[in-house]
Length: 104
Image 1 (cartoon, rainbow, N blue to C red):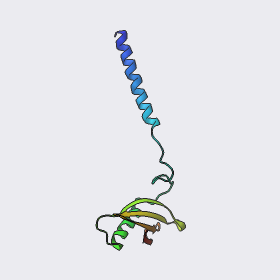
Image 2 (cartoon, rainbow, N blue to C red):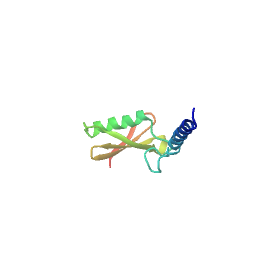
Image 3 (cartoon, helix red, strand yellow):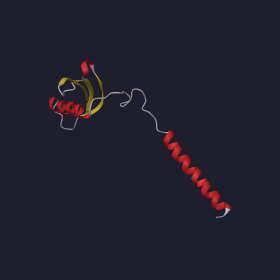
Image 4 (cartoon, rainbow, N blue to C red):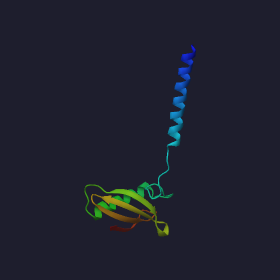
């Protein structure tokens, strides 16, 4: 192996290493206030129960999506929903009982 071949392989290795390290350091935490920044969110099954209940209650056929959730008083969860141009808030207990469902 000549000096230039070894030098080229070393340069390629250095570039690959810097790309790998840059990829690791560019992983950022979610900003405060973003959907996944809170420590505790409602389990997926409870979010889907809220979405299903909202679709039935508000007669929505185009789909209801849970967009965020957070703990609510009494061990329940608040699930924020979107459906077309409307928004709703669902309060659901850990047992899957919808306590409140309102348009906002």
